[in-house]
Image (cartoon, rainbow, N blue to C red; front, side, top):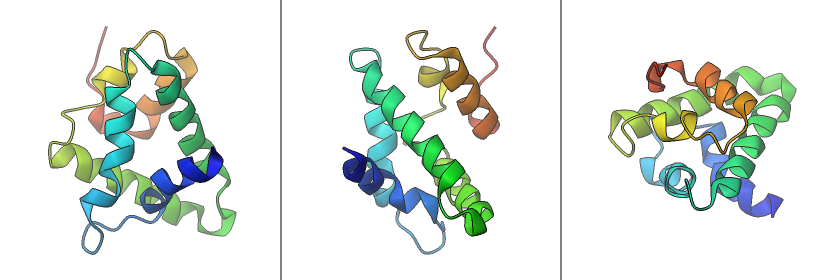
Length: 114
């Protein structure tokens, strides 16, 4: 299971918009957003894996990893793969702390929801 998750997210970790293809990062986001609400647990596991990987992957290159993940999301939203992360941050089936982490990580892609 971990190998499959890493395969989905590896390109996110070092994504460079000028040289990498959006097609390498698109499947993971579409899987997460389209799994809500029927398979919310899948979205939860994928987000938890991504955040754990961002926090622990090669501490010497953490800044590079965070930049890659941010760039991947910027391109995915910018190109219209999804309009925003609203479907994730409004899904009450996901733990509040996880939704808050999504908002903290990608604030520009999370609309203000009361």
